[in-house]
Length: 371
Image (cartoon, rainbow, N blue to C red; front, side, top):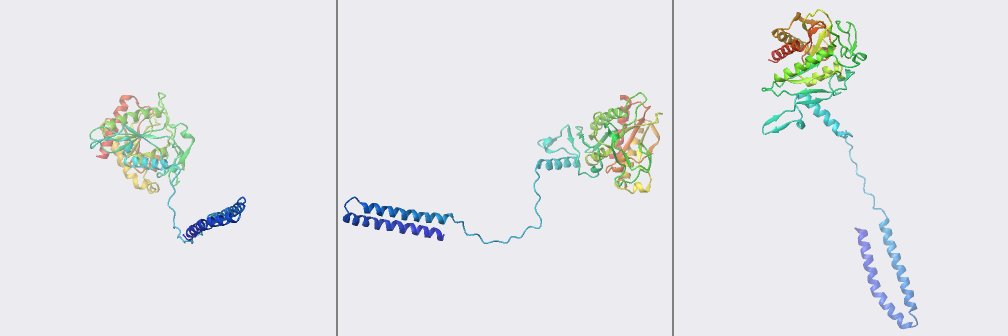
């Protein structure tokens, strides 16, 4: 403000002086020198130089930078807020998928509402989330899965994971830990007792008529899906074609996060058509004290027994007591009720009629389990 006032005062004084001095000087000079106005021209030139010098001085004032502001000490924050990711949609997508999976409900983008009625989509595709518990133990998890919504009335508001066993190309070329704590298997099976690693997904057996097990488990899974949907259950389908790039751990982790129970369908490698059974959790203290087995093996048993009773009610042949204790990768990582259901063996009938009866038995068992 002081600079502005000085400049303003200087300009006023300059032009006041010019207005007084110039007329008088010119009149006096003209009276004394009538020749050619030489004095006037000389005076005018000097005046112009003075004015130019004055304005140069004014410009020099403006060229000088402003006086530095006094420094103000600011306390640094103890922690910085999180920076936004370069692709904010990825975080939004991880949250949306996680919400859909945890709640078994469709996202708002795929749900239409008329008045108070909510219209569900037919299905949603769900992707593997690397931050899920036990997800880091999976070696093969590049495929997605599909969650189907029941249109039956009433809806059960329960989701059943139907896992058609095997069907992962080159799945037997990679390996995963049998147990999350790295301890060895306590029983044999497709992997021997004492092993700490198992094939990520085995190729499965072959029926006596040459049909691959993976083909038969898939046809059965598709029948089970339709019958569960008709009964009011939502269904998470792990595999719906010949090749699902999801190993046994990835399938289990999907079920843990997307479903209320997990049923894996298999045929045993025996050749005497011995009947249906489920794989129970071995009664070995070290195994049953390992998490997540410790917190969930009783629920696995309850589901297995319910499915066993459903099979009997549907007239399905049952092997012995209907339970064989086997240490499986699936139940070693399961945090929801989970069962490997062996519905027959290599000599069993795997045609549509027989598989339809098995599917009916599974639905009966699911009904019994959820009450």
